Length: 67
Image 1 (cartoon, rainbow, N blue to C red):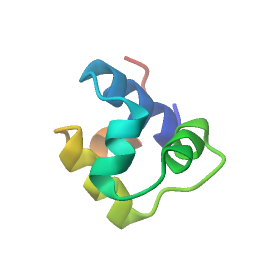
Image 2 (tube, rainbow, N blue to C red):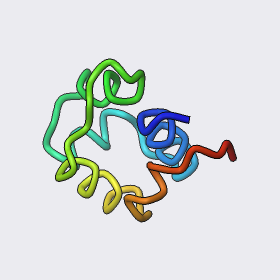
Image 3 (cartoon, rainbow, N blue to C red):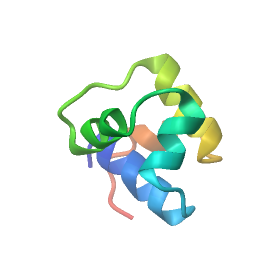
Image 4 (cartoon, one colour):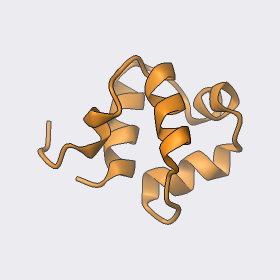
């Protein structure tokens, strides 16, 4: 799984919308959509912020195993 797919899966599992996540981390909703689709790269700083909002560790986004 890609980082974007891992972010999407975590976001859905905690019940956070793309819009709410975007607002919480200070980016646009289309940016979150592009990150999840893998068409935009996520910066380390943004990944840390996303992990805080989704109550997980940034390493969870780097896992290649499917859940």
